[in-house]
Length: 233
Length: 206
View 1 (cartoon, rainbow over the protein chains, first blue to last red):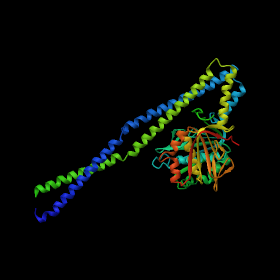
View 2 (cartoon, one colour):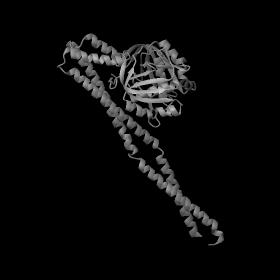
View 3 (cartoon, rainbow over the protein chains, first blue to last red):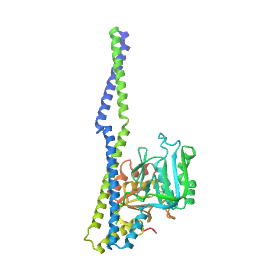
View 4 (tube, each protein chain N blue to C red):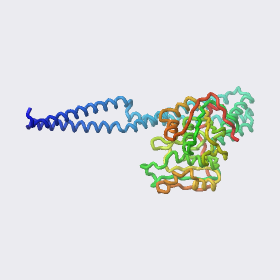
């Protein structure tokens, strides 16, 4: 080995070392993937619509079953097996729990991303809707719906991969929130309450638009999933 | 010398290929979050399915009880009375009982933290909530200084939140790693405890 060739061999050594290192990293990372991918992404993706179909079907069945119970109660009332007063009382309570449509005075709030339909920002968060619902209830709203999903006691408003779920139903902008109650005080609360500070900051920046419309003929749909109590007694 | 150059070229080529391969491998494994998201969606959908199946079963049983033609008038009436009783408890017209959990917050959460915590109880599943012996219905919370205001009444820490529902599912979902309680403890610096209960009493709405 000639003296002048030494840097050349050092270079080759370093090269070999790097190659070796990369090979190890390469195989290690491949192994990591094999451990983690149980099912292919595509397969997982295909499962979702199937499961969603099952949920829809179950919701339909629940709805049917709740209607059948109501019919059965009416029939028993006709046969004088259930007192009219008692059944009326039950129907009132169910309406109070959100199982009947509600009509009357109130406001319609439209919350929209600016420009409309831009999906890259996802500027309206589930937490914004939670804050609005909390405020409307605090200010005396008696019934609320978001994009025709009735908000009842057990309703949660969540976020899942850039979609908002209300009653586990996927919703997207623009959000139309209906609230029955005194239109003037509800509108004022929305425009002035400090509870919506973060939302109002985004409106100021021009990224969001919030419109409030007062109305005398609001039609809020019922909660369609029926109520059953498993733990309360 | 020509042979050396050839070796050098081949090694560089191999090195280049490996680097590209490595980058690709990193790129392929980086949409991990998408796979995780999909898995999450599937878990949630499955949860919903079993929940809805239970609900459907309960409704079917209820319908059958009404349909039994042998029912006397008093039996039918008592079925309705039982339903009335449950709705009255649910709506806060009467004291409500049931299993569940007690979450106690010893210092002062923000309004948003409280709203989010209550939302997570609802997401997991609850049939009744009270805060410091005030029934929470379709009611909103407001904050005034260090107090919360619920139904025009001031409530002060410690906040004892009673939640009727499945104690195990509530506790496990809230206390899991990266779950709501951990976030409130670590990010929001709240002092918070959770206790499972076989029997809770929620007051009627006053």
